[in-house]
Length: 500
Image (cartoon, rainbow, N blue to C red; front, top):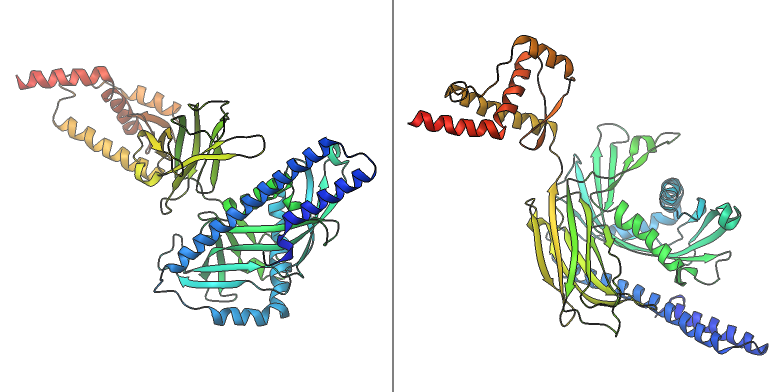
C-alpha cells in the first residue's frame, strides 16, 4: 500500500475506535455496540478483499497480455511524450469540457437509481495527469465500413488535483426533493480501446468515429460527500455495490464491443454542436437459452449451505434463486441471453455460491464455449466444478439464431417454387388429383383479402409472399396443399401405383 489513500480499512478502524471511545465516555457503551462494530468491520473487510481480488485479476490479465509478442505493435513513447506536453495547455480542457461534460449526463439519466430524480455534473476537471497509452496497433480487418481501426491500450490514473462535482436530486418520498453534492476523485480506468475512423476528402477530413472497449476494462472511482477531504463513501457497504454496478453498466456493457459510441465529427466541429454522439447498441444475432437445472456432490463451505448460481456471458449477467440448506439443489430456472457477434469467444462462465449472512463463499465454477454448440439443438450436460475438490452442475444450453432477413426468405421461396415446378414436370401431382383446382374467381377473391406483404407459413417457418396476381395465389394454394400430411401420403401411394 504505497499510498495513504489506499488504507481505507485503517480509516474505518479508527472511526470505530473513536465511536466506541465517545460512547464509553458517556457510559453508553453496551456490549451490542462492540458486536455491531465487529460486524461492520467484517463487511468493510469483505468489500476491500473483493476490490483487491478484482485488481489482482486484472493485473494478471495485463501481465499475460504483455508476454504476447505482437509483430505489428509499435512503441508509443513518442505519443505519450507529445500528449504530456499538450495536455495542460489545451487538451485537458477539450476532453473534459467539450467531450466528457456533454456526454456524462446521458449516462447519468440512463442508469440513475430509482431513488434519484435527477443527476448532473456541476463541475469537471481531470487534472494535470494525462492518459498513458501502453500500446498501439492497426487492425487489418474491420467489422464495419471504417477506413482505419486502431487498438489502443489506455491507462488513466487521475492526479490529486482532479475534481468533479456530482449533483443528485433525491425523490420527494425519500429525500424531500433535496439536492446532494458528491465529489468524484481518484479515477482509474485501464483497458483496450478500439477507435474506428471514416475519412472524408474535405474538412474536417474525419467524418465519423467509432469508439468502444475491446473488453470490459478495470474501473474505479472515489466518491466523497460535501468536501474533498472527507471519508471515502464508496467503501461503505451498500454504497460500494451501487457505485460498482453503475461503473459496470457503463464500462462493461454499454461501451464494450460490439456496442460502440458513434461520434459525428462534422456536428462536433460545427459552431453549435448538437446531437453529435449516440450509442450504437447492436441487435442480437442469436440467443442462448441457459437452463440451470440442478447440482450434485457439492462440498459445503459451512454446515448449512444455501447455494445459488450466478453466471455471465460477455457483458450480460444472471443469477438464480437461493436454495436453503441443501447440498443437492434443484433450480430449474431459464435465462435467455442475447449474443451480438460470433467473432468474440462467447465463453459462458458459471459460479456456484453459498449465500451467508455476512459474506458469500464460492463452491466451485465452470465454463462453456457457446460458439461450439451453435447448432440449434438442446445440449444437456453435467459439468464438473473447478477450484473445488468435488461437485457437478447440471445444465442445458440451446443456441437459436435470430430470424432470417427478407432476402433470405425470398431465396428460400424461390427454391421451394423450383421444387414444385420439378414435381409438376413429372406429372405425379396432377395425375393423382392432389392439387386443388382454383379458378380465376377464387384467385381474385383471395387476392383482395391478401395484404401487399402477406405472411404465411411453409414448413414451420415464416415466409414472405413476394409477387402479386393470380399466379402467386395459385402457387400459395398449391404449396399449402403439397405440404399437407394427407396429400403427402396420397403422393406416396400414387407413386407406388405408377411403379407397378
